[in-house]
Amino acid sequence: MSDFDVKSFTIPGQYYLDGVLLGSYNPPDGMKALREFDLFEDDCIVAAYPKSGQTWTLELVYLVLHHGTAYERENTARDMRTPWIEWGPVDEERLRNISNIPRPRVFKTHAIAKHLPVQLREKNVKMVFVFRNPKDVAVSYYHFYRMNAVLSRFPGTWSQFYEMFMAGNVAHGSWFDYVQEYWREFKDDKNVLFLYYEDMVKDHAGSVRKIANFLGRNLRDDVVEDIVKRTSFKTMKDNFATRAHKIPFFDENISPFFRKGNVGDWKNHFTVRQNEDFDRVYAEKVAESGFCIDFGE
Ligand code: PPS
Image (cartoon, rainbow, N blue to C red; front, side):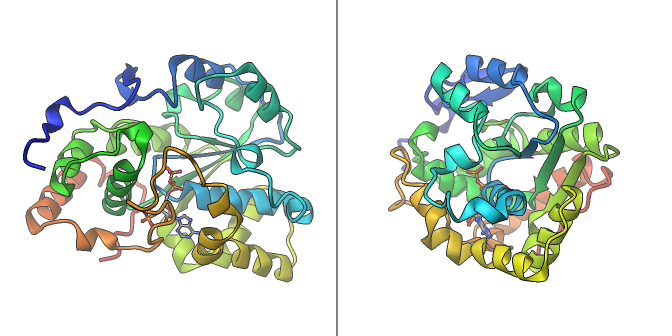
């Protein structure tokens, strides 16, 4: 590893949009398509910084809205259940296909707040935003960077990745800027639900009910129970969602996509110095923001 120069590390198609690092999987025309995407009033967008539990949340939202028919569509590839709008290279046919998925549509985005579809506000479209404690996000992102070819299968060490993460020199930019922009922009917006990964782990059924409430769905207890079962880490890892993740640029022998799914794995990675450094930066940058992150300490 000693000959790896982290300063010259890039990802395929790397470019910056408004200062945010993006790669070929979210190309400029994908970002434009996202901005201009036609929404319906009953759509729901799930937004999150990478590795915050978005796949889990997408499935929860999807099942809350489509519980009755979800079984029939169990083998629909994830990209056609809950499509990632800005995914590229942009292909007109895919854009048409993702626009035509059954309503109410559920979409994924990793865009910063400023890059969201213009119609989100114009049409009062609902959005769910997921927070996760950034120490676990950094660790999860490190392992994802190692196994993912669109992130150049990062060959460096955890400490090298930690420095990149803290400098915001990773895909989708600085976690600190990303979450604060969403919070500032949407904290008083009744069309936006903020969830925390750690709360979802602690109270899975409560999170299903929270999402259902937010989306105006009254679910029977047995339906809530069923959704909890179908979205457990183990079920999602072993069943359809894993199958949907047979993605050619992932090398799950390096690290599985459904890796640990727990709170506090940062304790197995952060050195004492990194932890102190992180806490200092966190206190300076976001401690006053008003959202409340549980680090599982
Ligand atoms: S991505 O690639 O940005 O969309 O990743 P994202 O889905 O946001 O986050 C991946 C992490 O979420 C964990 N995960 C889950 N945790 C609990 N329950 C369920 N059902 C679940 N599904 C995914 C996944 O394992 C990643 O976290 P780590 O810490 O790496 O295990």
